[in-house]
Image (tube, rainbow, N blue to C red; front, side, top):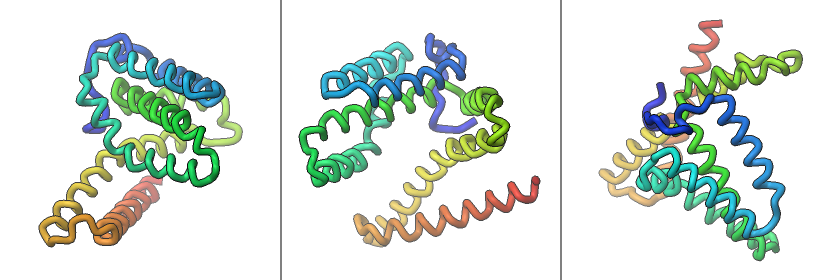
Amino acid sequence: MIAGLYIAGDSVLHRARPGHKLAALALGATLAMLLPGLAAACGVLVCVLLLYALAGLPLRVLGLQLRPLLPVLILIGVTQALMGDAAAVPAVLVRLTALILGAGLVTLTTRSLDMVAALERGLQPLRFMLRPDRVALAVSLAIRFIPVLAAILAEVREAQKARGREGHFLALAVPITIRVLKMTDEVAEAIDARG
């Protein structure tokens, strides 16, 4: 079980089958990308926020989902504006926020093992071109390392703060990169050893 992602509950969303939630997420994301304009993007975001309420998740959880997104959304908005399409920036940002919050809602209401098992079952028809077990392993590792990466970031920030290097990008990026690369090597060796 992944600490920090799944929040236990007894809502309709918690009880829904993982495969159904993943399919609804894929369908919703596709529709969100196809519907043009800010009004449609806002409609999608409102639907996602209503689903958070339906899941019985507190507003604090929504805030925790949004906070790490803000720098990324600002960067995307600035890039979009610089590429000459400033009018589309609000719709793009609202749409991305809705999509990321929707994906977060699935992980908050679904145990990771159930999600990975549903993904592996769903990919079985494609086994002639990919290995569903390997795709499921990759997804499970990606989910597993979200809280691990957050912990590494917190540890490095704390160490940099103690050294008075707070706010210096390279002082933060270099140790995080080194620790993540070391961790991925260890995981790759463990996977190789298991065959």
